[in-house]
Image (cartoon, rainbow, N blue to C red; front, top):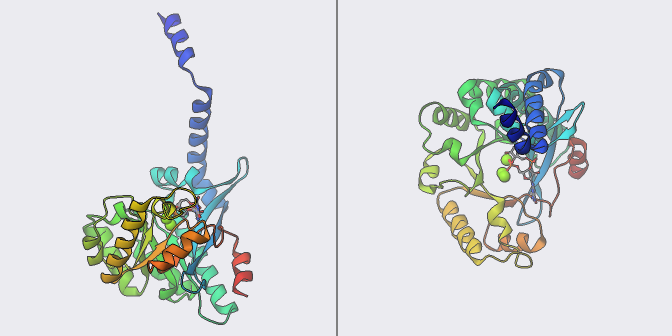
Length: 280
Ligand code: C2E
Ligand code: MG
Ligand code: MG
Ligand code: MG
C-alpha cells in the first residue's frame, strides 16, 4: 500500500509547483525580518495631466531587494504580507518613506508640487490605526495632507461599514485624497462610491487596453469608459487612467475628458532620483 501510494504520488509530483510553494513559504517567513532590515525600496511612477502632459503626481510602488532572489515585484510578496500580517509594518514604512520623499521634492523644486499616491491594504485599516499613523507621518515629515493620496481597491471599500468607512472619513477630513484603485474590476457601484469620501477613480488597465485600435480594438470598452468618465465627473470624481501604453490611447482618453493618466507611454516606475531629474 505504502509503496503503491508513494509511486502514485511520484507521478503527480510537480517539481515546479513544489519549488514555487517552497519559495512562497521562504518569502513569507522572511517578510517580517526583511521589514526590520530595511530590504524594501520604492519606485515612483509619474501621473500626468492628460490635457498638457504635466507631471502632477507619482504612485509609490514597493520592491523587495531580496538578498538571495534579487529585486522582487510586489505581486510576489504583497499577498503573502497581507496573509501573515507583515503588511502592517511594511505599509507603515511605505507611507513614511513616500511622505518623506514627497516633502523633499516639494522643498527642492519650485512650481506646483507633485502629490504622492500610496497603495494601502485593507488589513492596514483593520489591524492598525491607519488614521493615527497617517497623522503622525504627516506631522513628522511636514508633508501637507493635500499632497498625500491613498489608494484602496473597490472591494476594500464597497459595502464597508464601521472601521474602514470611519477611517476614510477621518482621512478625508484631514485633507488626504482617497482613490479607488483598479476601478471597474469589481462590483462597481458608482452611486455608492460617490457617497464615500472618495476623490479619484483609477480606471483599471483592462479597460484602457481596449482603447488601442492598433492592437485590440474593443468598442465596448470605449463606450463603457466614456460613460464612466462622464458619470464620475457628474458625481464630482476625478478619473486617472492606468496602463496608458500608447499615444493613441492617451489621445482617446484625453478626447473623452479623462483627467490624468499613468503608464509606460509616459514613464515606467523609477527610482526617486529620476523623478527629481524630471522635476528639474
Ligand atoms: P497597482 O496599484 O494597480 O499599480 C499599478 C501597476 O501597474 C504597477 O505594477 C505598475 O508598474 C504597473 N504599470 C504601470 N503602467 C503600466 C503599463 O503601462 N502597462 C502595464 N502592463 N503595467 C503598468 P507593480 O509595481 O508590479 O505593482 C503591482 C501591484 O502591487 C500594485 O498594483 C498594487 O496593487 C500592489 N502594490 C505595489 N506597491 C504596494 C504597496 O506599497 N502596498 C500595497 N498594499 N500594495 C502595493
Ligand atoms: Mg495602485
Ligand atoms: Mg491600480
Ligand atoms: Mg492595477
